[in-house]
Image 1: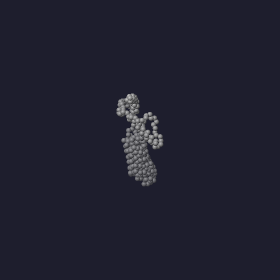
Image 2 (image 1 turned 30 degrees about the vertical axis):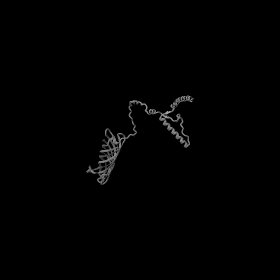
Image 3 (image 1 turned 90 degrees about the vertical axis):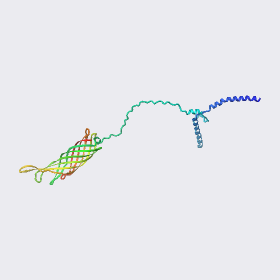
Image 4 (image 1 turned 180 degrees about the vertical axis):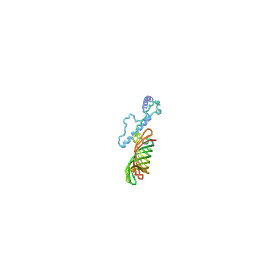
Length: 319
C-alpha cells in the first residue's frame, strides 16, 4: 500500500523536473555574454565609481553617478575562446587602388621682386681702372714783379699756351695721376723814359716752365657718361723768365733803335694747384675733358711768385 502511494508522487515529481529543464536552459541562454574588452571596460568603470564613493564619504560630497546607464553591473561572463580568437583576427584586406597620375601642369617661372634700390656705377666701373689724357689749353697769368738793380717793375701777364699729358689710376670715384706739361706766356710790354739817358725805353718779358705734378682727387658721376671732378696737385717746375729792353737813340739827328741783350733768370720752383672740370665718355673707351686749373708758382730769383689760370681741353683713352 505504501509502495503504491509513493509511485504516483515520484512520477509527478519527475514530470515537474522535466518541465523545468527548458526554463533552466532558457535562463542559461539569457545570461549576458560580452567580449573581454567590454568586460575590462566595465571593471574600470566600476572601480571609478567605488573610488568616487570613498572620496565622497571622506569629503562629504555626493559621489559621481552615471547619467544614462542602460547596462547592468551584474556579473557577466566572457565570450567563448573561439569568439575571442575571432575578434583578434585582422579585418578584410582593403585593395589598394593604384594612384592615378595626373598630368603635371607646366609651372610658371617665379619672379621675385627686388627691393634693392638702384646702385649708381662708380667712375671706375664706367670708364676703367686707368686712363691717359693728353691736354692743351690757354694760360693767363696774374701780375708779377721783377726787381731790377735800379727799379722794380710790375709785369702783367698776357695770353699763353700749354701742352701736357696726364696718366692716372681710379679707385671707385677716387683717382690719382701724374701730369707733365710745358707752359709759355708773354708779359705785356712796358714803355717808360729811362731816367739815366732820357731815352724812351720798352721792356718785354716772357716766362716758360717745365712742370711735373702729382695729383689726387674725386670724381662724381652726373649721368651715365658725364662726370664732374675736383683735383689738387703738388709738383716742381723749372721756371725760366726772360727780360729784354729796347730804346731809341738819336745820333746826329738820326734815330735808331737799340736792343739790349736779353736777361735770363731760371731756377727750380715749387708749384701747387687746384682744378675743376667735366669729363664726358664718348664711344668705346674714349673720353673728353674740359676744365679750369689754378696754379701757383714760387719765386724765381728776381721774379716774385705768381698765379696762373689755365683753361684745359683734353681727349684721352680709358682702359
